[in-house]
Length: 230
Image 1 (spheres, rainbow, N blue to C red):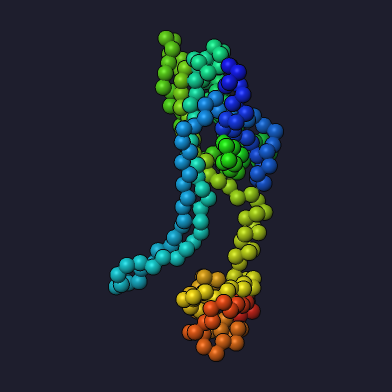
Image 2 (tube, rainbow, N blue to C red; image 1 turned 90 degrees about the vertical axis):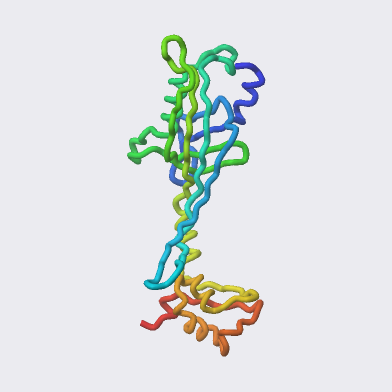
């Protein structure tokens, strides 16, 4: 490997094994020989759809936000062009990638979580799919160039997900600042995923006229267990 390539290598795309908390662990890392030209990041939201019989159109209800997915093409070369004439077999490079991303951990009985790092992109993730396309062969039919098309799904570390769920739980008290155009039934639906509790919220806040909310005021949305009479 030439000096210039050697100096750039620490900044190349890396795939490290990690635990469920996103902490790197001892394991086989994968260091890309060439950085990818593109990184595709996909974000998705799950919506539930409902349609009343005899009515036109549909109603949507937010379910959850899915983690981001990352798609990357990794080029492999076994000709020695980028390694100062030292030929690293493409099959060995593919094996290193598989050891880093798909090897079953004997303790957890599944592949380890991963940390994908490239520039400012640092993602705690898992590998979802990978396809190896061999693009060049030598006279003996052995591959000397290949492309790995890999997709990764972002993972929220254990513990952090539970904290997020608690913060958005309808069983906790929420304080909401009223903004221009806010309506109590809509705010109630946002907190409890059901607007039928708006009269209880109005009572809890001692609102004389829930149809005329004061901009800048703060409304208290109590836990459902305390708001609804059994």
